Structure formats: structure tokens, C-alpha cells
Length: 552
Image (cartoon, rainbow, N blue to C red):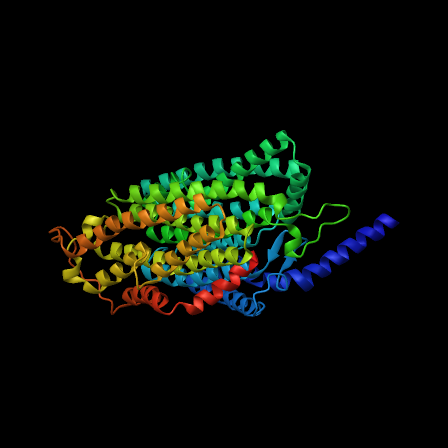
């Protein structure tokens, strides 16, 4: 009888919590799920077969974006990380300022992306429902990545984001390079997922819990007790295995091998989705994991239960030290290899693939600074997370604009080789100016958005040095970041040199690309924010500060 009553009480409490607390804060993801079902019905029901799948997808995303915006607007004005934090679905997910910001960013990007793909012509009408189902499914997984609070949900979210991406890479039917890209992506992804899953099982088995804040409490307890050598070795190995999965999603060295081949073989539209949305979600998950395991659970409003030892910053110092060095080393190597490898590329998509690798390195530098300062100054950690969030906000327009230009020029020139852009300034000066704005912003030169993004990330490194948080390591990262910015000048400006100074090829199509057209309007709509956010960036920075409040 007691068992039945306890079970009934548990079910009723769980149901009440789901309906009253979790579901209202999960509305954007529910909109995506409902839109996916509607798109599948468009493929199945004859009466819906003539519906425009892009408009259906855009309508569902618009509803989700409205809910995400209202949730973001309801965040505490003072940026208090505790008052707005809620654990959803019995602790599987967490809703806080970082979740609200990343969700808004992903859905905003998705709305722009659907408009862009509708104009570019990929997918065609026959494959539209399948394409947008995969895109929305992957985005749903990415939203869950940004809010994962449990190892089980972490793994499920990564796979939900990855599996549709494998199919998207092989979208171009009958094209050998596209099929090879999808196969290579799937093989690498399966290997990385297996390694990460083994690392997660080691973490859960050693610490006795899968709940991330509870894992921090167990790590702190082990730090207080001194920790046995065997458990420290197992935890270190598990952490490295978890880093493999995160590095794969970030396309960080040495797990970036899939990136250039997949970007070259897949459609430029797919490359745009993978380079922006996947990167934002992976960075959010990296922040989520490192901060959940590197700061005490009590500081997040989750008191240690029973006779547990209260976790302290000092007890987690070794954990943070380990994570800082892993993230910083990968950041330095990723940034350097991405920029050096991009120099000799002849295909524009492949060049942009290595560019995304390099930018992953810059983002990881900001994450490393945030982790380092979490043990010394919470204000510094908050500023570093703010810099990363701002970088992601500007990266949406920079990289989506770059891939949009590549895709729309492909439709005009029938080529994605850099050499095909020779002399383009003579027939299409407007698109050359747009390309110059995007590429110069990706370099990080003023007065464009990319300059502000890099300045904020480098400022967080300087702040870490001033605070004495892993000072030699932060200094190395600052030098590496500055040198790589100089290196990136050469391959980005080489594209502009081909467009402006090289004579056009006689075999190239001579059709101009006017900005006064629907494709030109799309390019303009993506390029103008790159300029505006370089001059008037206070609004986005204020939003990014709310996201950074979770690190307080």
C-alpha cells in the first residue's frame, strides 16, 4: 500500500512539475517538435503535399522564436544567475540566462537560414520537407545541448544534433563528393560518440551520479579527501574522452579532419548550417560542462544534501586547472592549424571550413579565460563568457553571410573555386564589396563586428593575466591569438585580390550578380548587421551580458 501511495505521489508530483514548471520554459523546443511533425505530414498526406515546406518551417520557427524572445525578456534585469535558474524535467535540463540566449540565437539564425535556402534553390521543392525536417531536428538537439544538465541528456542532445547533420551532408543526390562527405562525417561522428560515451560512463561510475551539479559536489568531496591516485587517473581519462566528443562538434584539432572534406563535398547551404549552428551549440555545451564541473554546486543555489561536505572553490581547483590546460592547448593548436591550412586552399568552401576551425580556436580561448577566472574573480569569468556569447552573436551574420555569398555566386558562376571569382569587380562590384565586408570582419579588423568580437575575447585574456589566473598560459594564448589574426590576413585578402585584380577567365559565365535582386537583398540583409554591430554593438553586448550572468 505504501509503495502504491509513494508511486502515485511521485507520478503526480512529476506530472505537476512538468506541466507547471518545465513545459512553459520548454515552449520553443516544443514548437520545433510540432513543426517537424507537420513537415512529415506534408510528405505523407496528399492534401498537404502542395504546401510550401519552407513557409511551414518558417512559421513554426517564428512561433518558437517569439516564445524564446519572451523568455529572454523575462530574465532578471540585474543578471542574477540564481533567481532565473530552473531545473527542468527532474534535472535533465536547466533553464538559465545561457539557455535563453543560445536558444534565441539558434532560432534567430534558423529563421534567416530558411529564407536564405529558399532563395538559393537548395533544397528543391521535392526534397524541401525532408531537408527542413533534418534541419529543425538538428536544431532541436542543439537547443538541448545548450541546456543539458545531465550526462544522459548531454549524450542524447549531441546525437540528436549529429545524426541529422550526417544526412544533410549527403543531400546532393547523385554527387559522389556529397556521398563521400556524408560517409566520412558519419564514420568520424560514430567514433567520437563512442569515445565520449565511454568517458561519460567512467565519470558516472566513478562519481556515482549523472547530474552535473551533483558531480561537482562529488569532485569537491574527492578534493577534500585528497583523492586516491586511481580515481584521479580514471577521472582525468574520462575528462579527455568527453573532450573528444566536444572537440568533434567544435571541429577542434586534432578532431577536425572531417570538417574540410565535408564542407567541400556538401552543399554550401549545409556548410553554413554546420559552421554556425553546430559551433554555437558546441561552445554552449563546453561552457555548460566546464562550469558545472568546475564551480561548487552551492553557488548555483543547489545545496549539498545530507551529510555531504559543502563543495568549495578550493576543492575544485585541480579540476579547473585540468580543464583550463586542456581547453587552452586545444584552442592554441586549433587556431594555428586552421589559419595555416586555409592559406593554400583553392576551393572557397574548403577555405571557409578551415576558417571555422580557426574561429573555434578563438572561441575556446574565451572559454579558457572564463574557466581560469572562475576560481579567482567571478566578475572576470562573467566578462569572458559575455565575450564568447557576443562572438557567437556576430559569428551568425559573418559566417552565414560568407556561405550565402558562396552559394549565390555558385548559382551564377557554376563554380565554387576561388579562381572563378577573378575579375568579378568588373561585372558585379556590389557582391565584391559585400564579400570584402564579411572577410575583413572575419579577420577582425575595425570598424566591423569581427573586430569587437576578437577585442572582447582578447580583453578577457588580458583580464585573466591581470587577475593572476593561469597567467603564463593566458599570456601564451594572447600572443597566439594576435599572431593568428595577422596570419589570417593573407588568405582572406587573397580572395579579394582575385576578385579585384586578376583578369576574368574567358570560360566564366558573364552574368552579373546585381544587389538589386532577391538574392542581392538576402546578401545585403546579412552583411548590413556585420557593419552595424561593429559601430553600434551595445545592444548585443547587453544581451550577451545576460548570458554571461550564469557564470557569476
